[in-house]
Image (cartoon, rainbow, N blue to C red; front, side, top):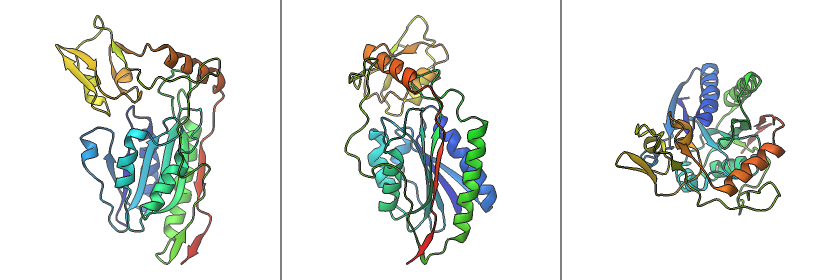
Length: 281
C-alpha cells in the first residue's frame, strides 16, 4: 500500500472533520500515510488528484438536496478514475436524510474503476440551522467512525487483485432529481436564486467571505462584499464572517428552515456499509 488519499468538498469544515478522523484512524491501522486533496475552492478544482496503484481512496462530500452537490458533480465524475484502487465513500448530512447521495457516490466510484469496500453517511450540523444536527459528530459518532475504520482496515488487509468487490447501499446510483424543499405548510418552495446580503454597518472588510466561497462568487467593491455569481447556499460566507454581517433574507428559504427544524429534530444515527464478501474474479 502506498497512501490513503482523501478527496473532500467541505465549505464549512464539517465534512473535512469526518473525513480526517476516519482517514487518520484508518492510517494508524494500516500504517499508511495520509494525503489530502480539497476540491472546495475554484482553484483547487483546477487540479485533478492522482491515484497510484496501491493507494486507498477516501472520497468525502456533503449531501445537498439528497445528492452530491450539483455544481461539483462534473468534477467528481472526472476525478474519480482509478486502477482498481480500494475506496471508501463518505457523505455527511444535516440530520434530514442522505437520500441518493451515498449510492450516487458509490456508483461513480465503480464507474471510475474503483473497488469500494466501505461507505458511510454521517450526521453533521445542518449549515442552514443552529439546532439541526448541532454538535454532531458527537462522541458516539466518533466512536462509530473509529469502529467503521477498523472494519474497513480488515477488508483492505484481506483484499487481493483476483477478487471483486460488490457493495450495496440504499438509494439510486443514477438519480434524476434532487430533493425539492418544502415550507411550513409542506408546499414546494424554490430559493435557488436567493443570495446572501451584507450589513455594511457590521462589515469589517476582512475579505473572509470572498476567500471561502466555493463558487468564487463574492467580489469586494470599495471594501464591501458583493454576491454576484452562483450561490449554492453552502453558508461558508455567513459562517466564516467574524462580525455576523452576512445573512440570507429570502422568506422561502427561512420557511424551509423552519420546516426541517420542526420535522427533523430527532437525532438521526450514522449509517455504515462494508462489503460482506470479496468475490473471486
